[in-house]
Length: 82
Image (tube, rainbow, N blue to C red):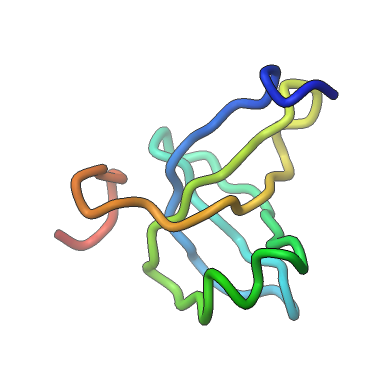
């Protein structure tokens, strides 16, 4: 899949599911599973429930995503604490 086809959205971490997998909530309330690549694990650091992250979704499968970084404080995710 070419990189320009990916969908980038902010999301909130709901709970960890394993070593590098997390249940996430999108701004529209949709929940999905996202993972962190091994390359980004040391860069992103510890991810806790409530953290806001930037996700990359495939237009072919919207039930899974890839965490590509942390959201800046200026972006808002509905349902997250101010």
